Length: 306
Ligand code: SD4
Image (spheres, rainbow, N blue to C red):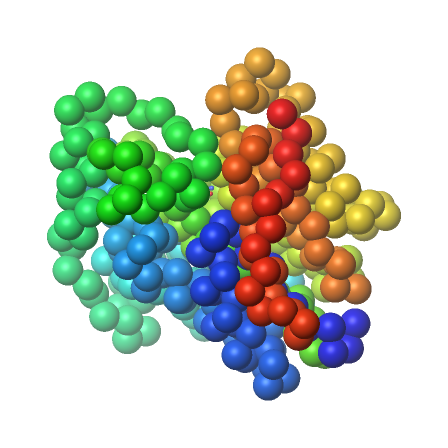
């Protein structure tokens, strides 16, 4: 593993996130720092809807979820956090500065402010405002499959069906340590208070340095009900390759959902502690980005079940 540093992350926006993570890894930096720095790029990006630029809930308020986990089972998480630009960094502070794993809502925001994170304006980004107004016309909640890759709100279909917007990233550093991060504005137009899989340790993200790490994107409810990322890690522990583990987890989702499986997307990425990576999706259209010493800008189309 030594010297086999790498980063793997979800969707096309993963390429830019990987670059930032790589800047740290290539200098011998820690996987945890890489995992945080990588997804911060996506949280700040104007082109995608992770972070404060994301679509609001059905009451018109953007609420953010994020978590982070290191190679020693240390983990931190925030959910339903409002008006903070970098939820991933707040999650890291929860991990490092509190005796807890998870802070939510007002308490999470209060903690962030106390830690010196600026409180950002509550107004929606112009694109989110437009999408929200469009959504209000019907006020129907229907998850759209592969929303991340259907174009951003400027180029995508009118009304911006930007329904769920997430980045999950796994990093392996030169010393062989693994860490991961996951951050999202959650599903657009979700019920107020809804929390998905992304900030849930074991669902959206899990890291066990002795085995590997895994993360999820897609329909959060269906990732939570089968403890997605943790399941993938346990399957790797039983000897499956990262790809086979992701596939087996997706098959489990399909079994659970039955005929409804065709209406949702669930995707996993994984890396084992030897630096072997894998991914698998329920439906066509999932992409993931890989970055290592050989090539920092690889983008792959994931294989899929249906
Ligand atoms: C959620 N899993 O909030 C997130 C959304 C997502 O691709 O991953 N979108 O359910």
